[in-house]
Image (cartoon, rainbow, N blue to C red; front, side, top):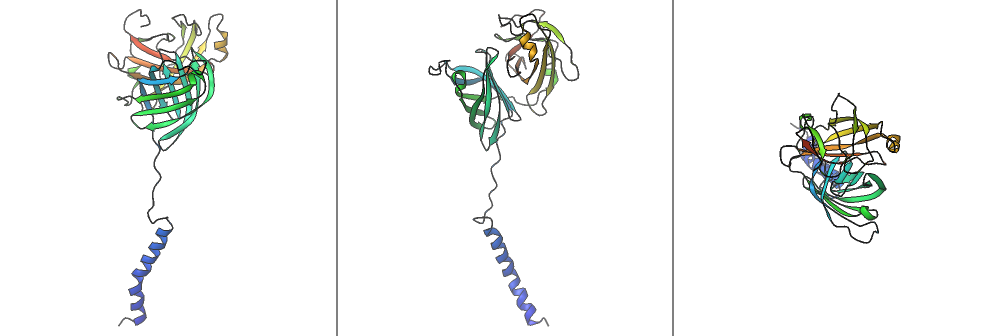
Length: 280
């Protein structure tokens, strides 16, 4: 026969467990534990139909809206450019939920004009980024970047084809960039279109894909520039991002942003399939 005291204890054991569970749940607030929302991931290439609305140099007159803004985002880096207007924005940011904040450096006509410009905005993951710039002139306004539909991983074959990349507008002319373990100097390229900041500089570059993204990291060293451009050689090391997109054929556009804190070497390029090409 089971002793009476043991029977009583077994009877109350489930009630004791329930009471203990209730105490534990009370320690969690209202009894329901809510996990914090995850941060949005804006990584990828944003295609060339974004919009930038900023001010002219007087900081009071609106500049005509720029409608070819495109961008690249990875690891807290943001790089935006308008090839038509020759403006570039390079910055860093942090994400909190769907919001982001940070700072950018602004380059106009290849030269840094503003730095540490406040940046804030919102991410709609897989769709767009919208933001506000808190500087003056070209850094005073808002922007929208539109996430590219084809943002799958890219491979080196998209870039190192038997062709050269030539500028769509007024971007500096570049040769094919050395890729992977191949680092080959390519001397005497010209900036073209009357832009001579990088006139006749030697060019040593490396490009690497960022795994699982539609982006590449790019690093370049300028060397042996022509007389009058030695200030470029004083800060010869540039870094940035590149991507590709399809326009008239598969992956026939190269988008490149390279800066060194003082100068900007960025633009959009098309594939040259003949011996000689001219900027389009």
